[in-house]
Length: 347
Image (spheres, rainbow, N blue to C red):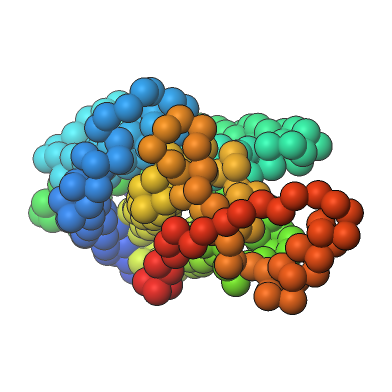
């Protein structure tokens, strides 16, 4: 004879069901937010990504753009299917977990690609960054396997045994143990990548004032890292609070972190492509030649042609002293004309 569940067990089970419903609602909200973001930025996607040659950055953009909504839709189906089998629930939840890690890896890959461009001449930084990226993926997948392999599905009859006559929809599962560890490697890697971005932008503070490329990288990097820090911290802390199922279950199953970071990195990509478009360049060329941000420039009408603005980061005294030195050495001076100023007022 099955023993009667205790009052504490009934209350805890009720809170778990409530947490699952909250997770379903948040998943629907995140999916709606992702679709809304897609609709309001579709014109930018068409402008910057629907033409041109296929590159690693372009592939990563499309993966980040379309994989997260698919994962959210899968979770909504998982939470809403009436009378699902235990096998379906186990496969769907574990697949969603795995795809979530893949989507987070894509986001990290976009940022790693950007740092790769910025440190074009520094093999040490590039090698360390790639090793850190691989280590982050390996550790996250290991923790995910440990947690998800012990996934236990709650069957409808088990719910009815405690709450007779209640009608349940969607999959219900026991919370995976130690799931919060899955997100820690991502937070560490994002911190390192932002530090590298800040170091690259702040290497020469005197030049930063008139360097729109470096300023944009620093601003966007800070904006995105703030999103990552807040979303990953909330998800990690929520996944850690196993005694608070109304917080813990939504943190694990709602994909809030994926939604926030996916939208954030898309905005970062649109921002750098917008800047490149204003400067008459493309984003990869812009990042590869970021040293040119020390002077005011724009691309000319011919391939390889640059138009340099004379009055940029140097003061008049600096210019005169350079000209005087050139005159004393008997060298001819470079004649310059003022051809226009990059409008950075939107900053």
